[in-house]
Image 1 (cartoon, rainbow, N blue to C red):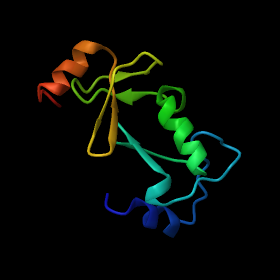
Image 2: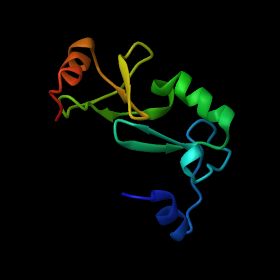
Image 3: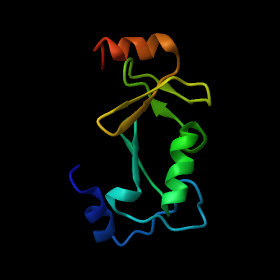
Length: 104
């Protein structure tokens, strides 16, 4: 979806921050993190840094971009950044398939 923030704001939603649920997220691209195609919003640049430093702590279940299977990432999950998007994987084999272009 192009410009999801405008859509969310149009619904009148208040989105809790991915790092600090007590703080409302800021709905703009600077406060958005995309992980495996899912969008997460944070409340501040500090919260974004925390999210990017430990993404598995804040994401919950994700769909593996190589196999399409659901998994729960851990702090040791392999990761890749492509065009400003973060991808987490259940294991090195899946990350290698992604690197080889074998994407779902």
